[in-house]
Length: 146
Image 1: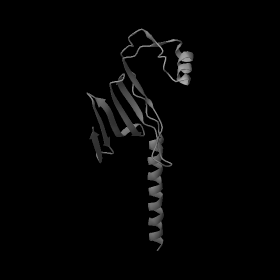
Image 2: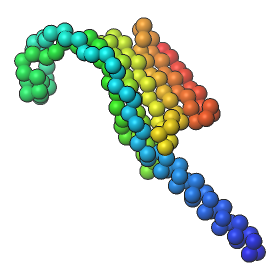
Image 3: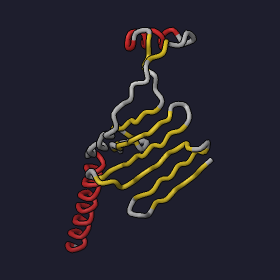
Image 4: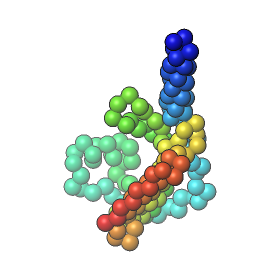
């Protein structure tokens, strides 16, 4: 009986230790993706559209004045907070490439102690959308397009 109790306590302790390590690993913020080396090309400015909602127009006036920079493409990268419907939060990192109003490609990763364990690519290229999610040591592979 004493051995069975010791095994039970050891098993519960090990599960708690593994669960705690898993939780700490997901809570560890990854390094952001490195910035792109390309320089921004100046394309001039454009007047703010007259049909913007009033709060949006006021915001742009304060932030930009009456002229907004013209944008053809954008590269955005960073980190965020993601919740799995409960107490489990993690910190993904992402990088996105956009051709304004036409196409985009977004790479996303969820990491464990900074190492990618779940990757996703969300895209709208050539008029077609796609999503691919892979990871968890090769146990997960989901893709869809349309």
